Amino acid sequence: MRTKLIILLLFISGFCLAQVTQVDYRRNLSKGVTLNIKQERVSNVLQMIGKAGQFYFSYNGVLFRQDSLVSLNVKNVPVREVLDQIFDGKVDYKENGGYIILRYAVNHLTIDAEHIANGDNEYAISGYVIDTRTGNKVKQASVYEKKLLQAALTDNNGYFTLRFRGEHSSVILTASKESYRDTSLVFLADVNIKPGKYEDPDKERGAFFSNTFGGKGFWRFLVSSKQRIQNLNIPDFFAQAPFQASFTPGLSSHGSMSSSVINKASLNVLGGYTAGTNGVEIAGAFNLTKGDIRKLQMAGLFNVVGGSVMGVQLSGAYNDVNLNMDGLQVAGLLNRVQAKVRGIQIGGVGSIAGKAVKGGQVAGLINFSKDISGFQLAGVLNNSSGSLRGMQLSGLVNYAKKMNGFQLGLVNLADSSSGVSIGLINLSNNGYRKISVYTNEVANTNISFKTGNANLYTLLIAGNNFSDTARVLTYGIGFGHDFILNKRFAIALEGTIQTIYLGNFEEANVLYRVQSHFQVNVLPRLAFFAGPAYNYYLKGLDDTPSGDRYKKELAPKQHRNFSNGAQGWLGWNLGVTVSL
Image (cartoon, rainbow, N blue to C red; front, side):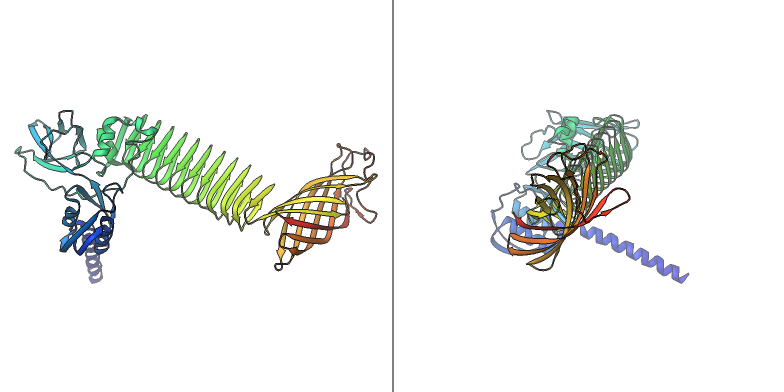
């Protein structure tokens, strides 16, 4: 019993400590700072205040002139009052974790309730939103009740009407508009009175959601003008709800407040516009999300998310994520993530990641990313504009700026390479671009082009035995590895497969060759080499004799005959290599 009591007390103490810590963490605007500065730039002053209070400022660079000079002499003055002195009340402040968000808000609002009615199971408020400095009525201001999720926009005369069903002991209205400071008033339903001032406990809390649909891109045309204005007026308010249903973004169970509500379940017949989902969201055509998606999002056509996705995102055509993707993303056509991907993207046409990918990208045509720690698989092109630590497999071209992994494709490209590339052409700025001219027992004149690096290089081979009576034409491909002994000496090991033409196109003569060279670098770009080889030669099935002036038998007199008709013999190479 005593042990259980101690555990319970420790739990309660820890819980209380956690609550106190959280509250203190959100009181950055109330922290006292001491400064004595003269003619210092505003940006430097904000850094000093942030360092003293152990927080950061977030603001748009056009909010004020960065080179404006400020003089201050304050001792243990709250941060809010210091900021009021610096900006003369023209900037509004909101807190979000370890940040204080600054935004332009030179004007002030007030709500003038002209009519308040408390009927049977209904509560209605009508009135005006007024600019306190000029006395003018403010049009297109948002008036909303946070708990009941009801909202309205003022008309051209600054007039609004809100109705609430059910029994409510109080209704708290907040008025917001871009470039104005928010104001909130409380209305007590039972006595119909309006106090002069109400302190909104959430007024200093903000959020870092990107307003993806408010004023740019194709998606803005899917959102009504009223919703776009609401986003501008109240970008930082978000509520939680268990469920929402929409027919279109403008016809939602949460009304015009749908973009401010994070739901656990969301069902959109055609399309919907929400603040986020912490559960499941399904749409017949499209989902527009201002914030984050957690768990599952599905749409018949496309999903567009202004925050991050942590879970699974599926669409018939297109997925777009403004921040990070953690999980699985599948689209019939294209996936696009502007920041990091930690998981797998699968696109019928392409997959794009603006930053690093830790996992994989699969696409029918193209994959694009910055850094790759995993794999890229594409039918046509893989492109990594950063470093590759994994593998790229493509039907045509692979590119990595810094290749530290494995590439398999027809053409492999890299700015710098320390990995392995297998393809017809492998090019990198620090790799091989070598031409070798050599002779051997098969053809007296051969040329090869090497691309890749010492780990693995590709050879493209062509040769001709210049002779009046024993001509041989050959072409093929091979792979090799250089064992670097020092700056001057190296040993190469190569394997090639070559087609042998002896005057009859109907013959399919194939020569397999394994060879080793001892290389001597006589100049920085010039080397001589020589070494032994072993040949395994398969004649064509056609018994037609070789053409005139072509060699009748490729194998020398000293050779071995295999049971399948193949021939084997020892050979040699001697030549020179020039590095381009």
